[in-house]
Image (cartoon, rainbow, N blue to C red; front, side, top):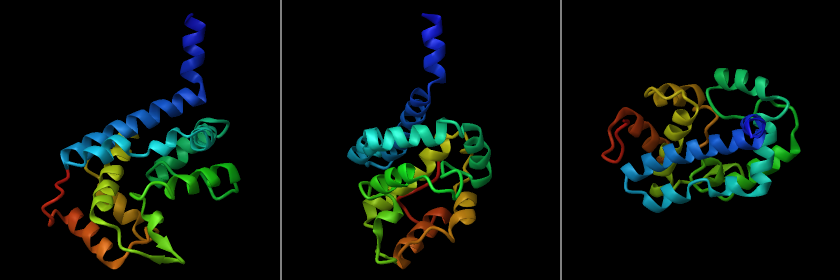
Length: 177
């Protein structure tokens, strides 16, 4: 029995499941604080599809797990570990962003960013905070993370203004806690 528990603890699927549940928990808490009850419950549900689950577990907790850990520290998040081709992971990532409208990539059409509806902007913020907390990195650093990544985040003009007002604490919706 002890051997089974040890092998399960080291299993890439168990490791990834633990991460996803932790991430969903933190995002759900943030969404609930903002009154986004349904979004908090359903957030990232597609990560439980086998297409995404298997690809993410293999990518982040498979043979390159150590490489991922090192790169995630420098990139500041749960990102693809490098630019090398990984068609299975890439397919899973596309599957994920095109089923979850809280991702800014969902709103890119013909290389042009559309404006994100308010409820998805709010969920995106909760997601960014929840991801940081799930990775054990959150200490109110969302502004720093955004500044480091904003050149790669393609947003419509109004959406970007909303995000940056939120980060300055100017909107009534969001207070970073």
